[in-house]
Amino acid sequence: MEFSIKTLSPGKAKTGCLVLGVYRGARGAELTRAAQLADRAARGALREALGDVSGKTGSTLLLRRVPGLAAERILLVGLGERKEFAEAAYRDAVRGAANALKDLGAKDAAVFFAELKAGARPPAWNLRHLVLGMREAFYRFDQLKTQKKSPAPALASVTIAAAATAPLREALREAVATADGAALARTLGNLPSNICTPAYLAEEARKLARQFKLAIEVLERRDMEKLGMGALVSVTRGSRQPPKLIVLKYSGGARGRKPVAFVGKGITFDTGGISLKPSGEMDEMKFDMSGAGSVLGALRALAAMRAPVNVVGIIPACENMPGGAASKPGDIVTTLSGQTVEILNTDAEGRLILCDALTYAARFDPEAVVDIATLTGACVIALGHVATGLFANDQTLADEIREAAGDAWDRVWQMPLWEDYQEQLRSNFADMANIGGRPAGSVTAACFLSRFAKKLRWAHLDIAGTAWKSGREKGSTGRPVPLLVRFVLRHAGKK
Image 1 (cartoon, rainbow, N blue to C red):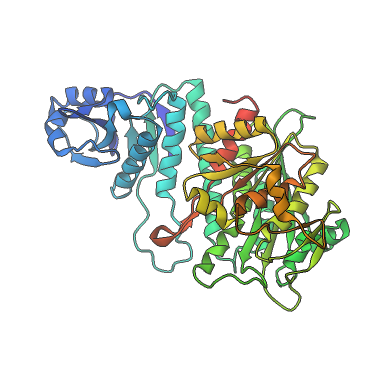
Image 2 (cartoon, rainbow, N blue to C red):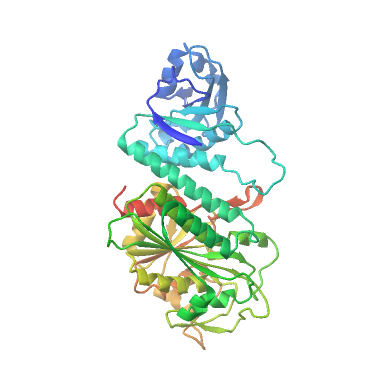
């Protein structure tokens, strides 16, 4: 799907579908400014149809061949109450329009949403979320099906009705690149673990490196052992799939400027190891590499838009399987940092691969480090499936991420990282245990990681509740690619 920006007249726009907004008012539906212009050209035909429009956010009404309008179809989209119209309502309206367009035979559409006032957001915000919302709605993962349930939507191009100013052109480049990055993350997450192995992730990283001329290095098991990554290697012992430590660099910023480092958890399947998980919904543990997918997606987006930033992505990738050689509860391993860890639960493996990756990240002298991981079920209990858990040892960095998350509408909630919780990680036999018990499980997991980030400006994103959906809508969400992209751009001064 291609997007473009063009100044259009609602009455004269020749398009397969003209998309206009309608507010819900006290006396019935109210047309937006663009819809009023179209209604004038149609001699009141749109206003006559308002009796069939609820104005409820995301609701739609399709009109065909309206006299006086050049468009083949008119799609009226409910925006809700004008005085309550803000970011969430705008995104719901985009989603409603996109879902309606999927079912039409229109090959192109013109959307008059850029002028809408979504709270205090500028038109560039509207444009970014229009593109991301449309691309998300049209995303399909059916490449492994031999029989498609329905043909692909016909819509091939979308014109955003607005003056093509420099800020809007830049917003469009960012939005398209971010959508491509999020789609990559979704596809990697949706692939089954017999296809998306650690080696597969490494090859996807190599493809990105070739396509966008990125620097890449892939460390093998012997490299990790030689370095002393005892925690990471311990997780891989029960699997026949060889582990990979993927290092991908994008250098679009000033030479010599310190990079931002993203560290993504890449457990391509998590059985829990010897501490075996319950069988129910274990298939969803293919999504345990969503942190890795989001890092690859974010780097793809930044490289595609040629962002003026330096970023290094570090992905420890492996499986966590039971077996005769697997790590056992009670084993003690030595990490790359030299600290020792007593493994009380082999299902707390994400922190074991991340701790060595965080230590490894320090060699790039990063300006800031953000790790992204489907780390704890406890975070899902705390925050559900709406907000990502945010932990940080630097409040300025945490504030930057929170602001970027709000801008991307890929929201986070900051959780405590107090010293009081560290006591739960006490071990009688090693420097620390890898779990801290049931209370505050997401917090103690972050506290564990913080012990390996003391010399770094570091933040941790627990995406266990936001990386994928279950049930009928089961599938990867591509989060937090939009957040990561917005964070890096804002950090570089591109607000």
